[in-house]
Length: 384
Image 1 (cartoon, rainbow, N blue to C red):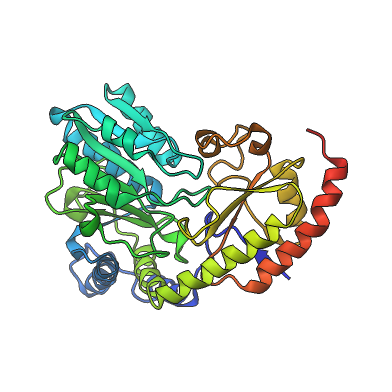
Image 2 (cartoon, rainbow, N blue to C red):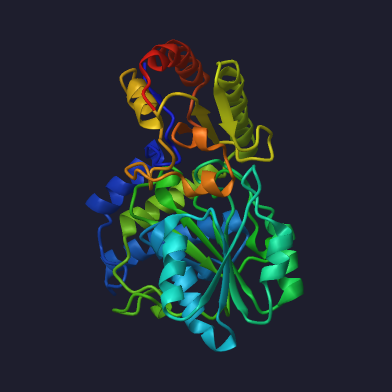
């Protein structure tokens, strides 16, 4: 059988998504900026997608802007907000465990004269609220925090963080990278005090190359792409109608019976953690409880390099990640695990297992059975 446990890297498109993609490529293929019938038909897909996504967040559809994915959404939020508000201050606050699309955007802005503060996290990957309180001052124009870490699944205390930020400086903007949380938990930006929120389609069974950025009305932000003035001039470029329609459909589907889906993923997580914990020399990185995301487990198998274990599992048609997909081809240790002060002996052995609501118990059981056979064999030949 096959066990696909790399859903945090990407997901398989759902059947409903595939159907709407085919229809918008083959029948309703017009440009939504065109004034004729074909254009208006395509425009309906864009509007419907915005309405569906807005409903899942309890926000207005005019606050939804479509992008090419999580990286662009994060760049637009971080760079666009920093450039629009630099007269109010030059301090930007983030954490040490952000996705590269936030970290590298911050590095770019540091080169433009901004001050960047990267907050530490504890051993479970949660940010230090005391450090946050000390970092936000009258110069702080933006705080960017991911809701769910893509490597270990730690969930940040956004409400507490938002309260602290607004207490320290009510004018500070808050951006949340929700690429790993959207579609897997309830998110209410207005209740949480969030000004901008990023999400990506291919994490929730839509195609790659499409995402969105929620921007609270009246938030000051500058575009980073310039062109024909689509999406109120904030994100120019011809709409990716098949991708946008698919994203809207996937969003609707993700939030249908979401409580049952969350419970299912937690049961898979518990099942895998129980199996891994019974294997000698296996350590779970991050929280074991339900204060972590339901769909991610990060584990180190002492004495075996992550790449070696990954390929041994691949021979059994079991697919996992060595770290995150964005860093799997790099030879450096995980920045997230380093920030968590994980034992150095475990850094080169970390493997990420990630699920979706479509993952079956049989896939978890097959993986545990395979690991029970593979790990002792690999340890006999391991060379560190």
